Amino acid sequence: MDVTIFGSGYVGLVTGACLAEVGNRVLCIDVDPRKIDLLNSGGVPIYEPGLEEMIKQNRDAGRLSFSTDAAEGVRHGLFQFIAVGTPPDEDGSADLQYVLAVARSIGSHMDGYRIIVNKSTVPVGTADQVAAAVSEALRARDAEVEFDVVSNPEFLKEGAAIEDFMRPDRIIVGTDNPRTGELLRALYAPFNRSHDRLMLMDVRSAELTKYAANAMLATKISFMNELSNIAEAVGADIEKVRIGIGSDPRIGYQFIYPGCGYGGSCFPKDVRALERTARGLGYKPQLLQAVEEVNFRQKDLIFNKIKTYFNDDLAGRTIAIWGLAFKPNTDDMREASSRVLIESLWAAGATVRAYDPVAMHETQRIYGERPDLVLVDDAHSALEGADALAVLTEWSEFRSPDFHAIQSRLKDRVVFDGRNILDGRLATASGLTYISIGRAPMR
Ligand code: NAD
Image 1 (cartoon, rainbow, N blue to C red):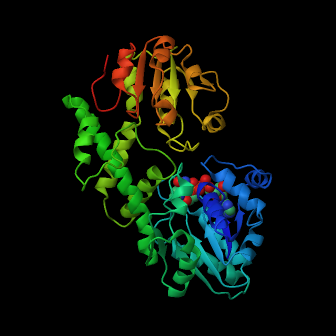
Image 2: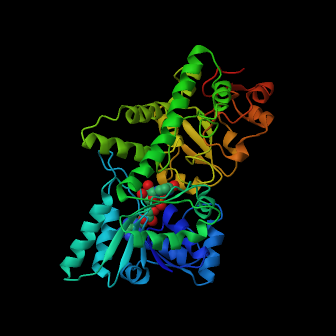
Image 3: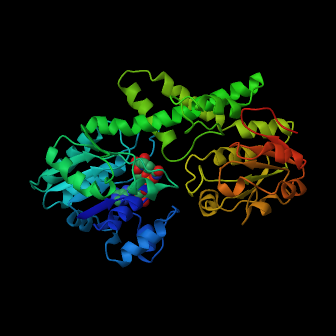
């Protein structure tokens, strides 16, 4: 089948590559000419495990191509996927300008029936707005062409995006037109083989399902973080509590890890957008507000622990940071906890020496060159001349470090573990002070 994808970011590129992988002819469109030039010259603008090889194979096979030409995109695909960003507006609601710009482009160039498939995370009612924008653009050129707008929210996780797309837990398709539903079922058939995971529903329920999933996951994290602070206050160990509660199958072990807050391009903005939608309709979303507030506070936790440890005197100190991406296996730094720590350390007069396996370029892009940010090529170099180490992303390569090497390099021999991934007993046996989340410091 012929498929066009508007937006060549994390979701658009993974969707495009995976749809091409199963034999479709896919054209990916983006407004950013640098991204398209890079893709056309064999590069990939983001880091996602396995993506570069999959793009290369499908480009070489002639099934995947890239362009900035929206008109060509609209001509190409029966399916017109929208996978552009929906960043938070000033008031926290989702900014739909990019989604609606694509809708207008489609309406301006469409010459036959198209299925417009919205993959971006958008508030309930957006499909109606997309349909209105397409109709208006059609009217402006006196054209009468049929189209359908489908809600098909994406659930992939950065870092495991290809696996998630190829073997999804569920494929949500929101449409009021059974014929369109069947066409999407056919498009998704290669990803839906072992048992039926495609869930057809009305458009509004599909739109809300995405927000409900992210809000639920964010709630689990904030719940555990709230509990970790209580555990610390009462002298309990949150990791033991986690193991204790996870054994109840109604709770389960997944996604109940305490830490220094959630970040990324989805949870923060989606919780805020859902909260905003509810408020706009006169409903006070108390739980969502608390989820957001707990997370906000949690992102300051490691900084506060460092500040307390150094008696409020961070001026002139150097703090090593391992992990900058908001989670492992991605270079995405959007709303990452590391950014809150780095900026707080700077405000307190400290210098940061940082290392991340893949997010160094992104960090440089965000902060540019500055004397109080030293980006180094490996984890051990980050420790040189540093007073303390903070671990902020649970990359595998940080999990079992050489504690003696850490101890011998740090001036103050203290490690702050924002993800509770290190073995505190081994750390202290090497002469380090170990400070983590939701339990007493170990010396
Ligand atoms: P992204 O910022 O990585 O990519 C968006 C791309 O759209 C950019 O390359 C941008 O240049 C392009 N773009 C903007 N306007 C355009 C236009 N008019 N025509 C063509 N391209 C245009 O964003 P993303 O992380 O891929 O997220 C896209 C959407 O998917 C968002 O709504 C997000 O909430 C949702 N989502 C993201 C994830 C994730 O893990 N990143 C997972 C599920 C859903």
